[in-house]
Length: 317
Image 1 (tube, rainbow, N blue to C red):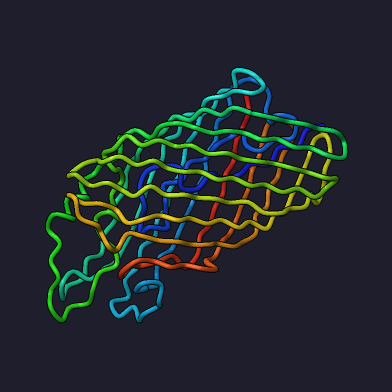
Image 2 (spheres, rainbow, N blue to C red):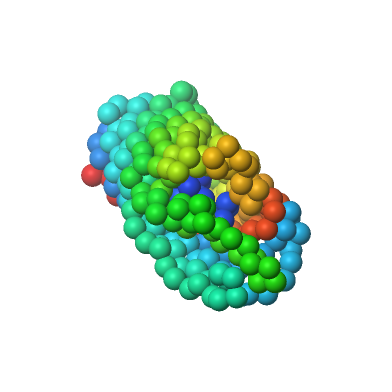
């Protein structure tokens, strides 16, 4: 019997929408018992929806006078191939849709931005695994590259931003809405899965190395992490269901635009929420999760997230 527990790899790809919403990168197969899916292809889709409707200045909540908001949906289509038990590659294509309302001087700008984001190619190597009926452990390394395939038209707004005296401030800017960065970036990380009887836990840490992209704009490097304890409600040869308490976090510095610091781009956050997963044989996995911010400190004035929904499914051929 093998149990597969998929985990969303947050913040490993592309650019932020209001700092805390990264174009996520779904890695699958993920933390497995005994190596996860066997050799061959795996395809799937992962969705992350984040609602931003709270305004903060330096981590302090302030009235949202203009009722500005940003709804960000990132659908990640991925195809993976495991060459051997310990090594595999994966290609990821994010499809992004963002709807927003923000003040523009004394007027209101309400619009959408949609398209393909920055794609990525990832490699996965399993350093160690151990499995018995009572205990299981797996430790993986992940590394790859993000390529500049997403449109960067919205970054042009950074060239023309003007504050109108007396008008409400906007917490949603071009760097929040852009579909791509125009830069080639690196991705490195590690993931751990462990189980004793029906109790399991996961942990992952990933670091994104950014380079300078279009219009001389450089998104800051960011560190993301996630994990937590869980329990298998049922565990059998053909069907497995698990419930996990997930804790995720991010630390991102301030971006650099033409040699100057973009003050409204830094964030440190912690999210908490449940995640439910199902696995059928070695063929199909699905997971659904919900998170809310437990701690959120941003730099300057930003529109920040109120909640986040996640779902993912994968099929092994």
